[in-house]
Length: 163
Length: 163
DNA sequence: ATCAGGTGTTTTACCGGTAAAAGGAGTCCC
DNA sequence: GGGACTCCTTTTACCGGTAAAACACCTGAT
Image (cartoon, rainbow over all chains, first blue to last red):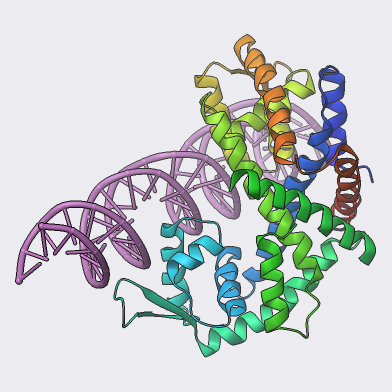
């Protein structure tokens, strides 16, 4: 239970005993865990030639169960419209998605998984879930549930206050 | 307590009822919270003309209580050596740090906060702690402590398994 | 019908990150 | 003391991201 962030927190307590650095323990670990998870996933996905960001696009399309527009994908992936365009261009050239301008409003683009894209994400997503559970292997099912609940409460509050 | 990640999890349950997607609740929220925290901090730091990454370098130097070498800063900030060089060059040009080649081993560089850098980070760090506590305002002190403990356990396990 | 204003997507210009190569300095061993 | 090896930092070449401009299209008022 002694990790890199705990050591950082101790250093701060020594240097600035006047401050309450309790939030550092939470924030630092959230950031560190994110870095770890991203790295593990990127590495695994590289074998199939897709990046984490591209995986996210495929995931969003798969769980939506139908076509989405670029603007919806942009919102879903918390990134810029320009990034979405680049990802779609690459995924299209890989044959994993199709882009078609909408008939009723020709500004809009309908993005869909191709048969190949559908098969890929349906294989990759279950692998990802297992992999992520593996990273969190130190926690029991019960602890995982409590962690999820605390994070949900924190995130809901943060999104309400900022988003 | 109903957030964006909860909706994503529900979509997956509908599309792939065969999978256990409980880890998505934890991982998704960790990732989302990281994005939120980074955005809030970057925005606030921009007023003083430093990026989040530059702040991290200054923080590492301040809590170390003395000089560090670029390789130590690279390890401390979980980034590449090239990134460290760029950040140091910028921070040096801003007059916030100094670089001096070590006397006993001239491959090594001794990076230190200048008086100005010391004063800046000593002002910014307390602001950051307060800001981060604000993002997590939905949690009580007790919940924050339990969240920190669960994250510590998860992270210690993950670091042992991978790092 | 036209045009002002708004919306959805892509393009442009740039910025900060990385991997790998290069450069400069120490160590070891014959 | 010269050469192979290793270590630390910086440079190089490139890649994926963003903000803002450009582009294409729709809508509603006139």
